[in-house]
Image (cartoon, rainbow, N blue to C red; front, top):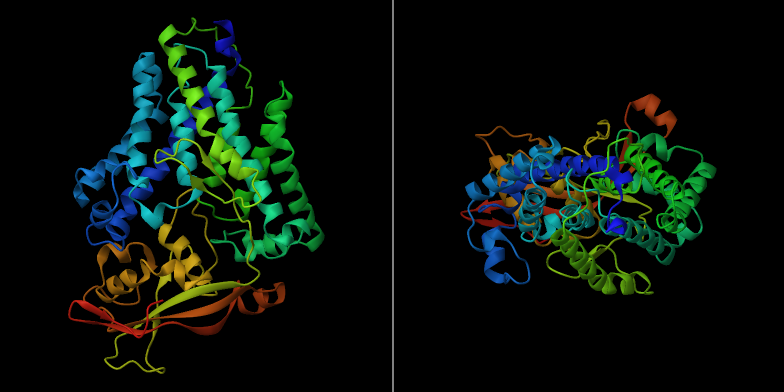
Amino acid sequence: MDWFTAPDYWMSRLVFQRALAVVYLVAFLGAALQFRALLGERGMLPVPAFVRRVAFRRSPSVFHFRYSDRFFAAWAWAGCAVSVALVAGLDSLLPLWGAMLLWLVPWVMYLSIVNVGQTWYSFGWESLLLEVGFLAVFLGNDEVAPPIVVLFLLRWVLFRLEFGAGLIKLRGDECWRKLTCLDHHHETQPMPGPLSWFFHRLPKPLHRVEVAANHFTQLVVPVLLFTPQPIATAGASLMILTQLWLVLSGNFSWLNWITIVVALSAVEFPSERPSPPGAPLWYEVVVLAVAALVVGLSYRPVRNMISRGQVMNRSFDPLHLVNTYGAFGSVSRVRYEVVVEGTADDVPREDSAWREYEFRGKPGDPRRWPRQYAPYHLRLDWLMWFAALSPAYAGAWFGGLVERLLENDRDTLKLLRHSPFPPDAPPRHIRARLFRYRFTTWRELRETGACWDRTYVRDFLPPTRLSGAEVVRGRRP
């Protein structure tokens, strides 16, 4: 059927597929390098304990049938290998059905990780990667031109992602309506980047322009995705430029990058490649069946998006096929950070030699300038930001973190930038304190060399020690 394929989008599909494979690679690499301390058999939220209390139908995953740290590591590294194969274009060397099966592999593998990842994998970009990755299975390879239906389903994902984010802002914090949110956001975002200090110090009128441009890009431009070319390309290009601005302003894992990837599928790249033969009937039937499934599953995300009680980043099915998205419906005006310290003293006192643990991405030493980590996701650092917002966010895992620091657990220490204690001499006590952080002014930066200024607020966790196999502490965070 001539209407089924879009030969002009051959290059768009190629760029989209290779870029998506890179995002898959980053996701699997993060899982392979971080899982032991987070989800391993001795992790803060062990997978074996999770699968014992949660049924397979609620969180389909291969780890319901078998789990060991060695098996998880092999699974994650195998995901990296498949991703590299896709980046290299192995799918283009296979028959159509083989290419589809190859693209199905990373989706199944990452779904298995996300569905047992618990709090560590509760971010919207996990579901977004799975939703986009599922549609990528049906985009085909060089044997057929890209199916129009799948291209429009990818635009439907992009529309819901951007339009939903725009609506949650207008319905949420009044600073989005007053155009003042960026007076605070660059400073209080989860993980500032190396340029965030400079973004925060931009003139306030420019912050108003930033917010207004964001509203335009998220609430008006998404409609252009469903218009003829070259208008759709122009709309997608505006989204890409906006996402690159966000990439420069902070560390948002791969959220910005996968948004760019999806937007690339709507861009019509020049291509002189001859049109491939028509799609086989079985392929057309499968693609149309998948499209019908996605349309049916879109009901609840759309109902949520237009609801006054709109929620952000929720999956409505255990396979994460069609989800609802959104970001920063509210913006913090003040930045708080949990600072974790240890001492070797048997009896902890205020004047003890408390030594600070340094995390990789989250602010710590006021003189240490933020670094660029995105699209790599530092999961512990992100959860520490949530813990500073409210101790309730840390209830499930913070005690496990403290226990492992008291043991000088090697896998946990690998997640940190620096431990102040040698491997053979763990601390006797750990405490955590809450500080208020703010970016310094130009004058303070010149005089002190520090990009942050911090002020003690209160104790987050009193001095805590190990007593045999138990953690003894004054109270839970």
